Image (tube, rainbow, N blue to C red):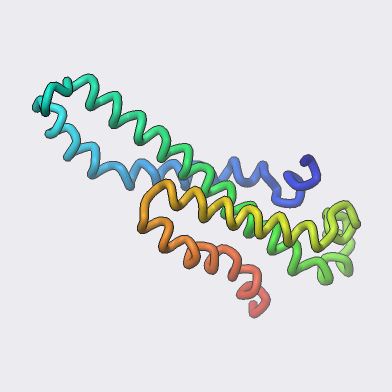
Length: 153
């Protein structure tokens, strides 16, 4: 586990986390305003407290899913990048000590890790909403495609 966390530089994932959190709160900003109006009324015996509790439980679950999506997408992208760069990394003394060139993690296992993280990302998007799920392959193409586009600079 430690080797895979090092492969994907998990500490950098923590530093990128504020962007996912900001995106989440920007995404729910409009729903908070419309939900406040609904809280002022009673619907079929449901109290304001019940509705508020349900609202926050729902958004707490979505928050966890957004964080999971960010971690899985970034992990897939980093592992895929290391997988593609393995032949270049072995030639550079600075990068030759990375997990794949050093033989700590095999290229096959790095690719399997990428696939597992990508599938976990797609599963998490399914539980957020339909739009996230349908656009998840596009998001994966962007984060995984970066490893190819950087070769043209």
